[in-house]
Image (cartoon, rainbow, N blue to C red; front, side, top):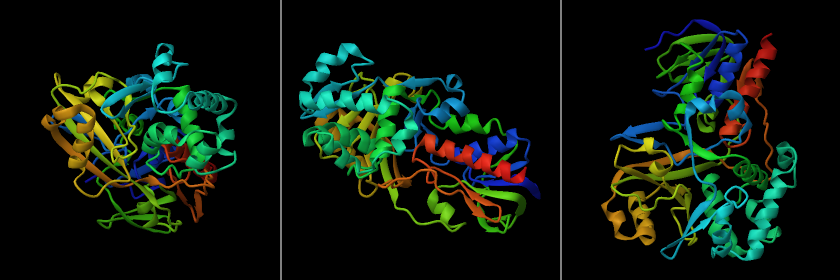
Length: 412
């Protein structure tokens, strides 16, 4: 059991990305900080488990290197990011089709034009969408007219075929929203990020990101320390220890935060993920794999060991199947059945490693979506997290830094 100080300038509840970002800003400004984390490691939802030598991120997670807060707060070179190839491998009727970004991978242009995911006009509209989202200040994308993503795509002229075979499995997977009801403002930001930077994973798994952040808070993070309540600006742990702060920051995911402070309820996005070990990879591709059938429940998948060999022991391969909004039932069987239609009987020989059922993978972000929600609750209590900004790594880290800056100003 960690030894808690009796009082500090700021108590931060939660050692996810937001809590770590807030604590690091305050620590850098010479405020005394204690970070209380209920789990046995930092990261919150950004965790990686080691199972039989395989690295399993808790849910299919990727890092978009274009996110400004990553560049601002993290040493990306030290994380040793292994990148996916730009584009996707779309699976349809037992065949695969490469759909790539011809601006970044020109040699794939002809194959992309021939891929039966939509018309030539659809593909020309993607180029126009790319140009629009990459133009100007990205903050302007969060101020544009807001609509559900699927409505915005239809109004932009995309066919239902293109929506079902490309946008739904790719962005429905990224945003954990197969219905594409999420705000088009968030869609625009993610589309821009995919065109501006890379998508990848750290060599040691996604948990390497929060661990690097926590390494700059030596002795300040107290693991296995769950919080029961907040009494004024005194935090009470579940084992009745008390720590007093001049300010308290609640930096947990929204359901946990609502058990401590008064916040409006928002619907959760759920996610299932199934990991398999294979002796041979079903494809050599380093692309994200999309379900082009429109049937699911696996919207996207990846051979993680193709992208980052460190994710699997030597001579073995790691396959992940992502199932947004699906956490009930026999996920392993559902994933096998669908991937058998892609790659045949070899799937039957794969060894199931673990299934993740994540009841709260994030909050819904339906239009009208407005980031930068209130973080000052009064009486010296503050709140941060991706539910206060955009639902992303960027949103979590930016929210934490924004909160740290506000608290530092209040205490100065």
